[in-house]
Length: 341
Image (cartoon, rainbow, N blue to C red; front, side):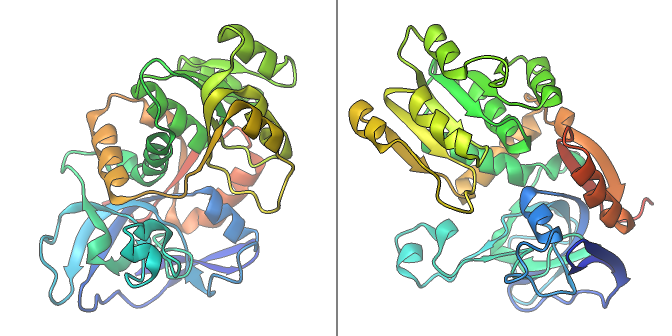
C-alpha cells in the first residue's frame, strides 16, 4: 500500500509500506478521501514533533470503506461506508469514568500520536468507526469530522432559535460553525479580515463584518438594540479576538472558545463580572456530534460542497500543503487517497 508520510518539518514523502493487518477489535479501512486540517498544517511545519513519530502518515478527516475485519469485530462488514471518530480514550481515568471520553486525560488522537489516514489503508479500533449512508458521496463524507467539531461547538453554546450569533473567524471551521448555527435557528454574522473569505461568507448568505474597515462591536450593538450578541464563537485564536468577545457579548451572553490559543492573552475579566457572561470551552466532539454531522452532510441541506476548494491525489500531498500555505483564501483541501479505478 501507499502512504504519504511526514518525514520532517516541511517534508512529506509518498512511500510503499506493508499492507495493514487489523488486530483484535480493529478494522482496516480503504481510505477514499482525507481532508487537511489546521492540526495537519501545524504538524507539517514541525510544531508538533513532540507528538508524532516520523516517518508517519498523519491525517484524520476521512471517508472510506471497510477492507478487513480483525478478530472479534461485530456490527461492521467488509464494504461498509464509514468514517472514523479519531479519539482513542483510555477508559479508566476520572474524566472517562465521568463520561467525557473525548477529553480523556490520556487521550491519543489518531493521525497524531498514531499513524493517520493519508494512506490507501488505515487500521483503527472498530469502536471508533461510524457508519455512513451508502449513497453519501465520499468527498463530502470527508467533511463529517470537521462538521462534527461545529456540531459540538453549537451544542455547547446552548444556542436558541432566534439568537443573534457572531462567528469571529471565517476559515473552514468558522464557516462550518456558521452553517450549523444558522441551521439551529441562529441569526449569524461572520467577522473576518480576509476579503476573499468575507466574499465567500456573504455568498452563503451571511451578514459579514470586516473589522479593518468598520467598528465590529459598534455594528453588533447597533443591530441588537445596543445589547450585544447572544452567542459569540471565537475561532481566530488572536489577541484581537480575545478582546472582541467580551465587548461583543450581551449581558448574560455566551462565549464559546473554539480556537486553540498557544499562549495566554489578555481577557477583560471585569466584563465577565459586570455582564455575568458565560465562557464555554469546546474541544473536538462526542459520538452524538458525529452522528449529527453525518445526518447533516447526508441531508444535502447545507452547501458543504462549496467548502471544498481543491482535491489532490495522495502522491501530491507535499504539493497540497505547499498550495495551502500559499493560498490563504482556500477553504478545505481534500486528498484522494486511492487511485482512480
